Figure 1 (tube, rainbow, N blue to C red):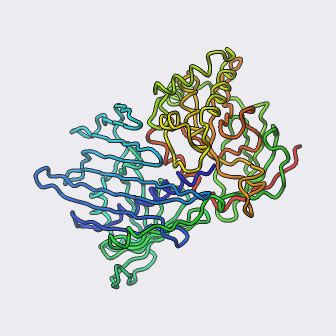
Figure 2 (cartoon, rainbow, N blue to C red):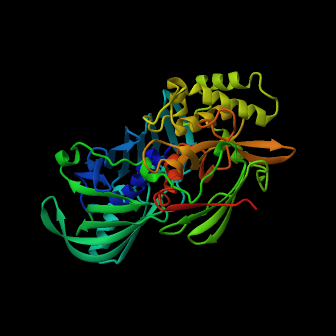
Figure 3 (cartoon, rainbow, N blue to C red):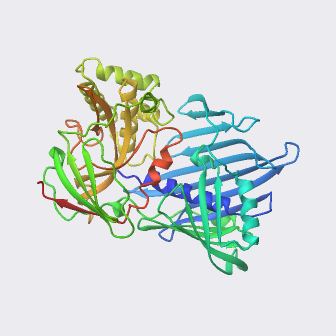
Length: 505
């Protein structure tokens, strides 16, 4: 019941384009290593490299990130890897991303010889491969090596603000805009020596609202970068390989992210009506969803009221379009609705279920609750295909398997990231009567011509769909190009959120 498993690498991934794009201007071949820290403690390492191929006339840029997250007494290893290939004049040739959060998902893109044509995408995960054609990225963009050259030129010219729009494999075919604003020019420490440097602030469209402070050398090579992720500081520091790969000593993140509300909630699992005030201790509160059983009313830049009314979910303003239905029924690497094991689970669940869509959706939810018999925090973010076979996981595995099984039953579904109230999470201080970051599912149900999102949680309670302590912060279709991007929107909330329990009108 914790989203740090995805949010931390997602936030680091959002930082990495800045560190990658704002790098060694003018050099085509290099390798460098970084120590990755959270709260001043080592959690892993990052490696970046760039190589030129003379026979092919291409430049290959690669990055690898390996970190360990500590949560609830368990350690979870997570990794990301990317590769971009471009011609010397910056035309994209191919990209690849690998994400291993409990199961390896690999996505590759091969670009056509003529810009503007369809891009061939291949996604492999859980032993299955899906090929498709995707549209050429919108607008102008630079590949990583071309972005490095641009940054080096602009830095040498003394530009106070440098902006790039770069194609990065972790964001798929959606270009990422990175803006660096120079603060001052001053010496910086790099691998035990002092070099001329620049301090600047960077922002990225991949993580709206977050800001990094970076020290770079005079060529733009990142020496140190720090981002405040909610109440947690994330830092990458230039190092040699041996230092970067020293053993990790990660801080405990699960308990530290629990939110203690100002009031106690009695019988939370049976609650169907509730009101809460959510506010930020620092920074602005992002816009929260107003769909399904949740209504969000903004009160100020830092605060808003959330009303939960389970018996009367808000209907969609218009019926879903064919494109929307296709996205919410799609088989993806994370939620493969065409997996034979998932199809079998959905068929067993609905065999004797009520004929109406909500009755069938509820039967699938109960089946997923029963099927994942080993409730565990030791899994990172397994795909639905892995979860259906291992029968193990926490809220993320319950959510992705439920989304996949609902889709296998022909019911449009999506994943929800947010918070839920629990009376007891553990025996330590601050672990009772708290909100914890959580994931569940929503099914799109038609009832007498009206379409509504119905919340379905397969992790907490077999007897009930959900309850009014489920506070939605964001949604994801679990599309292959969306999982990380949908999680980074939560990053600025963690560690800064305050919840007040309000009386029911």
